[in-house]
Image 1 (tube, rainbow, N blue to C red):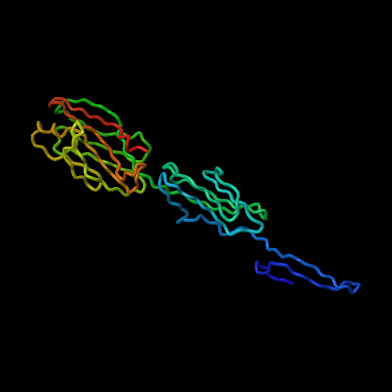
Image 2 (cartoon, one colour; image 1 turned 120 degrees about the horizontal axis):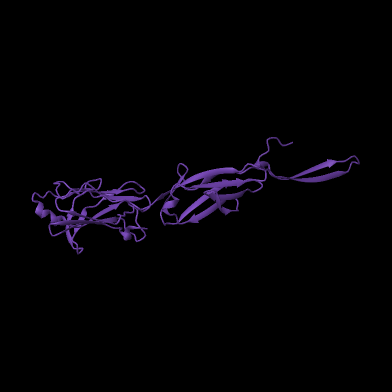
Length: 273
């Protein structure tokens, strides 16, 4: 008699016995241990999270300690089966987009020994570049009037760039660049001031949070020299499809003569995905 049978007891057993006619009989028995699948896990996951980078191949690998009889593995994404079949492990490969950030994968191991499959979930954390966009808008005001400037974001919620509290009369005129990507760690470069003809004029220092304060000009008549294009550049360490780590937003601040001030915002398409 075998007690507490385990996989170490598996194999072929022979038994000789004497029947009622004193004849020696021989019987053979094959012992196989049935077992449920166990120890299900996602490979390369930390705290039930797999980290990837936008547009770079990512493999979602689920594996289990195989059962007997073999289990059948299924991998689901947003409750939709994306891969099925196989024993021991199952792999799904794809190129993630930013919309895949925080989605869940479910791995199921189904065994004929039970109606309740073994299950495991994992969350996908996708790192994607910040994207800067400024809404098109044109306003016309007379010199001397107060003008507040700001932009609105129509693109997906990744990055916004804001110009605000800028007037022709204010001694302190402030602009702000705001990024919202993943990871949320940003490095802002100097702002660049260019002419209406896209010629470089100067670089302007920024704060750690992306703020720009235009230099103080005591004589209002000289403030038209601040007109032109202003560029904000920001990076969170994730390159775009072209391999550029810095994303760029642009805004126009134009004075014609000394009478009229125009403000123009537009999308920077090269920074879009």
